[in-house]
Amino acid sequence: MKPVMVKSTLAFSAIVLALTGCLQEGAISPSHAANTAAPAAPVQASSPVAQGRYGLPDFSALVDQVGPAVVNISVTQKVARGGASGEDPFADDPFYDFLRRFGIPAPGTPGGGRGGRAPEQIQQGVGSGFIVSADGYVLTNAHVVDGATEVTVKLTDKRDFKAKVVGSDKRTDVALLKIDATGLPFVKTGDAEHSKVGEWVVAMGSPFGFENTVTAGIISAKARRLPDENYVPFIQTDVAINPGNSGGPLFNLAGEVIGINSQIYSRSGGFMGISFAIPIDVALKVKDQLQKYGKVSRGRLGVTIQGLDADLAQNFGLDKPSGALVANVEAGSPAEKGGLQPGDVVTAVNGQKIDSSADLPRIIGEQKPGTTVRLSVWRDRKSREVNVTLGEQATEKTLAASPDRKGENPSAKLGLTGRALSPQEASRLGVPGGIVVEGASGPAAKAGLQGGDVILGINNQAITSVEQFRKLLDAAGNRFALLVQRGGSRIFVAVRLG
Image 1 (tube, helix red, strand yellow):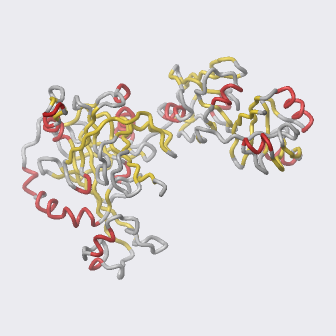
Image 2 (cartoon, one colour; image 1 turned 120 degrees about the vertical axis):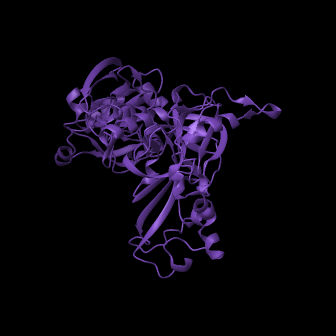
Image 3 (cartoon, helix red, strand yellow; image 1 turned 135 degrees about the horizontal axis):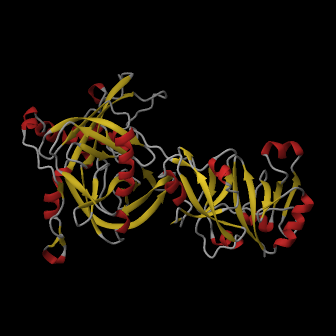
């Protein structure tokens, strides 16, 4: 069975209410509001984690120190029963069938049965978070509070507060809450950038509603890129993270938060040894904007980019496949105004190196709109500097890090047949000319070329006719890069003959 990414580790359902209802009802009471507030100081371990029996680390002192700043988050949502399709909203819940078999009702279903559904239901969910300032600011995941009509934050001293959602950012999955309290214990943040693979880390949160649960493990990898996630270089760990842990802190052994637990990779919806956390430096940048403006504004270049493999890097004269290859520049975009061109390889932004194409959207997105950035660009086998004044809201479209490989040209050695673009087709695409692929075999087929692709250039030289393309191909040797239009996207493709 193919693994699937479970994005929301938030547990929405009667599972938590049914299995932990007695804990929640017995733990929350109005009298808790009168408890004495904790001291207004960051909570952190006062000394390194001690070595316990059998040479293993003892996390008890760390937990005692940082635990008071970790909170449980309960949310209430109003959702349409089954949506427009009328499907059961609990169909994907791994515990739904278990609960149904033992007669435990799901929320919003009279008696727990599948019939008698109301048009709208009240749905409960749980998550985790942590206090980042003594005056009541709390960080959590955006998906924890998404669509919530009511948010309650519960402290370890049993006090609970209604929380205001100051703002949330779905792209990084970070949300900022505010509770009306002062003198609260709060976490100290660490340096996620300098954490190391193999380090011990500790997570705290409310998996399945079980508050203040502590789990430990190691950092498995850093700067992990996930599908459709271009703004977060995730920290991968083997710490046990389950539904309800979302938004909870990931601590290093100094008691500093280095990440926010956000996602799990799972076949079942439960822990399988692969968990992902948002680096705290990314989260704090979002938090600062949410606190100041209530939203996040990002810089925008206006380009389509793709990754470089070894063949493409060699064709562009690069020593190694690093940087972001510009496949297309939007008309009228900041990139076009700044002089960026298709075929440019962006190797750095303001001196910050671009190792992978996925680094570019994140770094540009961290800049304020209107900021002028200095891009280091590799063009025509030479390095140069390009200054671009960014627009607003990053919409960079990142293609696969390992680009599709498609070679083409009407030549026997390439194994491709095609025709020239008509003047009308060229005008519609905004190009001087090109080759429409009609068939591919040999190297062209091996590279992945398919009917309907349009070849626009070879080695950064635009194609104006079939004859010109033949001449350029003959002069290119056995390795070259083609600019290909497929559907609405343009990508560079490395081709190797022989």
